[in-house]
Image (cartoon, rainbow, N blue to C red):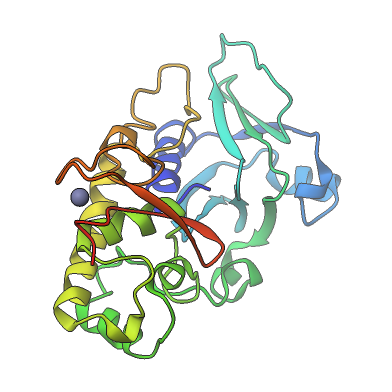
Length: 272
Ligand SMILES: [Zn+2]
């Protein structure tokens, strides 16, 4: 599932390629992805300019000129692609937004995820974004806040990092990577992690997410045919999906273990 760096890469591309353009036509192939009837959705977005593109947790918020917003959650397999005016739209997207430039913005595999139409004014109280924890990259989110949140928790650290109500936007890939960066085993009890380790975890989280964003995350699906950014962080992964391979730091073999129902990847030598 895409996490902060992947969704941030999508946001960057949408801002660069779609913001300021007007939606001219809508095709819905999967009406179950929507929260309103197709006609309501189409009437609300056609002839509207995309005025801003934001991210909250793992969701994209495209706001339109008419105080409506489209919220997209890709969940496990969804992705979005822009086809240039001279390109043939291939595949069967769940939704296509045709732009005034002749380009087509196509959302694929929105099966577990959704595309919801909401009022921009109600963003903070809408169910899609309610109950989410703080954004780890929010400048207002400080070390003291992180330590204070951790002190209220008792369970294993890896599932906690993936808990969207604890902090937003971290999933399986970056929870593994940040624990490697901090030298902490995924199974450690949060209450038994020293303050020094917790502090390292905070700075690793910030640094890791920022580097992953700069390199385009680990998404496999390119945004455009000439997209060279998306997926650039993949070769930088230290433990995630590297079971049986050598640790880049100590040459020990990377191990996998089920922790909280998900695969934890770790180095038994570098992490304690
Ligand atoms: Zn190692």
